[in-house]
Amino acid sequence: MGKWKSALLVLTGFVTLGAVSTTASAKAKQTPVTVNVVFNVRDRNAMNTYVSQTVDPTSANYHQYLTPQQVADRFGRTNAEISDFNRYFSQYHLKSAAYPGNFVMKVQGSQKNLVKAFKATPAKTNKDWDVTGTKLPGKLSSQVASVLGLFVDKKKTSTKTDKKALKFTHNLIEDDTPIVASSQNQLAKKYGPTKFADRYGVNKLYDQNLHGAGQRFGVIVTYDFNPSDVADYWKQMGVNSDVSRIHKIYTTDNTGGPKQRTMMM
Image: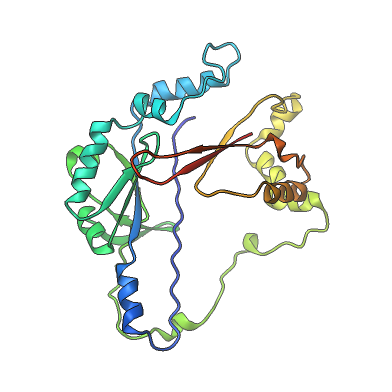
């Protein structure tokens, strides 16, 4: 699997048109902020080896997929380590719970308390991203790979409404502009499997008559979906739209954390 990557995109938009009532402002301040703490994997080499074995027909672990609890026991943070994080965040009046597998923890509370708990520093622009600095106690910090969802603006907050903020503008680069497809192939080349195959060298496998027949994969999603929407997308991509291949597996976090859904194909 190489290096694990986790990406979460949190978009929060506020448009102020005219006066804002005191009640509305109070509610906005009370709205909890959600931050995700991504943990380092215990024994990464062993995990990568096991994952490779699940797709190796000659291995005894072929298609022997682990449950979330088994993943946590072998590769995720231990229950004792998760408890250490929960105790730390509770000191700042924050709610926290690990997702199944003990790879990611959800931390929720006020922006003010989150900033204190993570010792957050104002964001610095790193290439195309704004990165907020965070710091946890040494024992906890060594177990963390990344903190996602926490943003501290380095600009001073203005009490006056910025007139420029009320103007709706766009700054699309050429690659972002909508496409009016004259054929399914054009749409797939722009957004679908053709683009993926070209970019990641999959065509080299196709040239060897390796099409992935008989293989299956899982996609972890945070919200449910309608199979009919998947079928519509596949049709637009020009691929087999048979949704009977999709099997939903629902997992529940017994710690009271969020639910996950895995789509197996």
